[in-house]
Amino acid sequence: MSALNLAPGLDRAAEENKLVGVVTESGRQYAVSLIWHTACTPQALAAEARESASRLQAGVLCLYPARDPGGVTQYGLGELLLGHRHGLAALAPSIAAGCLNSLLAAWRTTGGAWVVIAIRDDNTIVCDKAFAHESDAATAFLDHLTDEWTERICPSHWSNPSTTDAPLASYLRAKKVLLQTPRGARNRVLRLGAVSLLTVLAAGGVLYLLKSQEKAQVPGKPVLHSPKASRPWAGAPRLLPALLACERALRRDGFGLLSIPGWKLGEAGRCDGKSVRFGLVRTTGTRGWADYALRSIPGDLNVTGTHSALTVSRPLPPAPVLEQLSDEPPLREALRYLQAQFEEAGVELDGRLEHEPSDVLHVSFNVQGDMLPFASVFEPIRNAVLREITYDVLTDSWRVTAALYPRPVSPTDPALP
Image 1: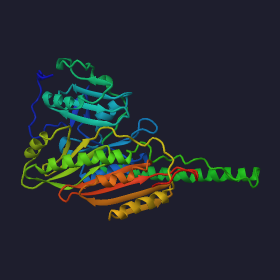
Image 2: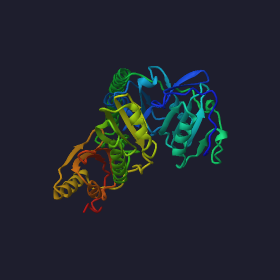
Image 3: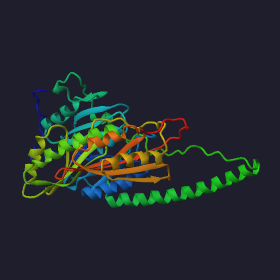
Image 4: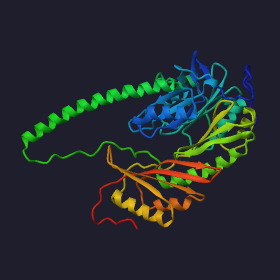
């Protein structure tokens, strides 16, 4: 695919804004070039999306609940300057809804724009971009081609032997994920909260009646409680490998963004084990300077924002996730072990135990300079997941937030060192 024949009749967009925000396919308009994030829990989807939209100054957002039970819950952030508006359907979820395997695809829409979509096996949207220029779409497609994909789709005239050609319309599903304002997402949170409260009250009444009947039938017999259905840890990135991946990505991208003339980092970089993101604020430069410099940074960067503020993010390769809990010592013992290790290193560790809705130990710490020696402290703890790492490039400062989950163990199980 070294030489490409550009599609005829394509309108040339300004070089300063290569991304296209709205495309037309089969007479319908779709929102593209959204920035996708994964929510920690399905229950927190709308609240997390609204908080991110406020922090990143996104004008619109969309909510993509898990397609399958226990699947990935995602939300997309949009940019009004790209034409994103309330009520517009998002293209990527319409494709992901029908994907049974991983997919990397590049299509020319019936409206003339080019879209590049990448969806992993777990239905995570890792690339959602549209371009006016075929060559830009080809570059984005090639950036992802080295990863493993079950399906690879691109135009036949690109002459790539590992791909097939298939129409975009055949991958679109009727289910629509619509853009909405952050206020609309808040209203949805309130509606869901009201429904949840009614459900809890109703369930509580039924549970009271059942327990009353059980006590009446079997006097004095202890009531056996079923295991808690909540699994907030399921699918979360394991702490140690996520720390290593985030540390490399935050350092690499952070120092790369420092070199953009006329722009400065607006906030600390963030990583949740699945993606990294930074904020850029204009000082004396232009959007064109930023776009030119960002193109020189290796890898697939997602860029959104205005002429005065940008959000730069990058998906990380899939990291090991926590699928089931291993036998672990009690959380209080784990907390004592961690506090002793960090106290010896002269670093304060914040620990907070919670028991509702499930037992969890939240820990966080701040460190300056080399963070990796502190990561090794968590090696004996297998039920630890990453929540977030923040990195301030200018001060070389880190903040790590994690969660530890227990599993009952027998008295003969080995303790932590």
